[in-house]
Image 1: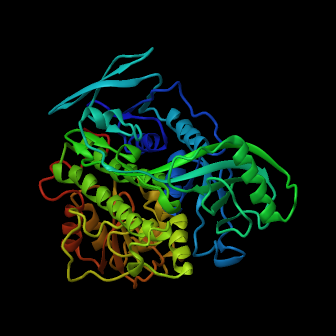
Image 2 (image 1 turned 180 degrees about the vertical axis):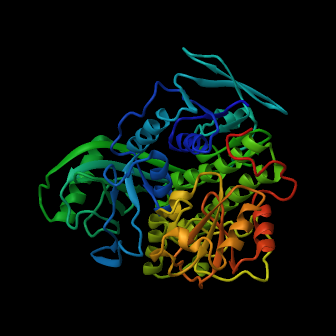
Image 3 (image 1 turned 90 degrees about the horizontal axis):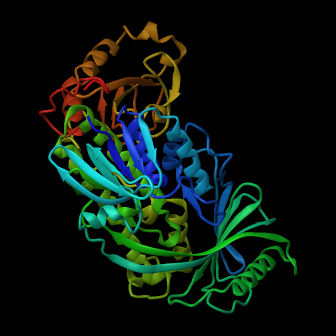
Length: 533
């Protein structure tokens, strides 16, 4: 069968290609450039806990050394701190990393994948699709024809794939503009990110009185100054003056020492593609959506797109297309991004001075600061990861379903589990393999070897129920899970979202939930192992 064609070699395209290759799906990545990203110290990304773990799993390396997990967060107004968060146990820290470093790690991992091909200097020119596949033509020094089973456009805001499919991309232009600088300097409380609103020193020129400071490794900081609406020119001289003024205000030094590494202007747009699927063609990442006001990070949602789509495309590639499963990608992901855009648009007039919705949003300055903090830290309606509770893949709620601390449809907690080979691993380490995960909560099993309890109690019955499921599944055992009673059975999607939690072994309920998760009945051949087709 033909490979999946991924158009675009940014973080989302590379992540999707790696996720497919890890599920035994051959993939071709079309990169219009010569390969690699030019280093830009001021072009950075912030990844939340779930997307950082996803990227690390794909890259095969820990990214903590390449980026920086923040020690804490402060929101300041004038001279006072209005909120502070210390990261650590129970409060995961965001990962701040230069985008070219992240892309390089993913690109290096892709080069090690035997099922993956990266075609550089290959710009998409045209494409055609029919019932059995997609044909794409590239131009450039290596222009040629490519044949694929599916094609995914991860080719950014000006997506050629989206334009060739005549998919509209409505939204708002220049929702926010920021002047950006990367500097190496010493600031108080190193390693701690903060947002400073209405700093007490006098500012002149096109700056709106809001500065975000995000630390990187080796004493480097990314500084973002919010610009007022309009197209006022930010000259190098004006930006250097603002850097000196800001560092003096924070350090108290009249001539602060710093090294200027990079500058730029970052413009935030809010757009959402009308369709994310057109037959065998899909959109993901910035090709499908643009967001990012209030410190939210569009790459987070792009990586979640890749995680959601990969296991569904892999299932279709190995076992034949199933429309309900493939359609659910657009339904699930577009609904979540749309909700985040609506939330941002509702609070935008209040936080940026429009005032039209003050009666619906917390009216105090502290409340406004809390909303901004949510965006920067991935919390609340503006920034938190979405849930698939209303997904078309969600099964009917069985009578045996029990509540746990993870709501149905939300990402599961990363607990330690015992795998089928008897090893102790993190639950997230078993994601992304195309299999459903069935997790039994069984206190006390951790002190015994697996061979002693696999044939005892409810395990034989549960193992038989798992082997009879309509899709490949892995049985795991956890000593505990937040909010779960002993003998609770969790069913988890391949992308880590909770399907259901059942009280004890309920073969019929487990089967029904698994069948709904992979798109419903009629999945002929889904018990075939990945790679056998």
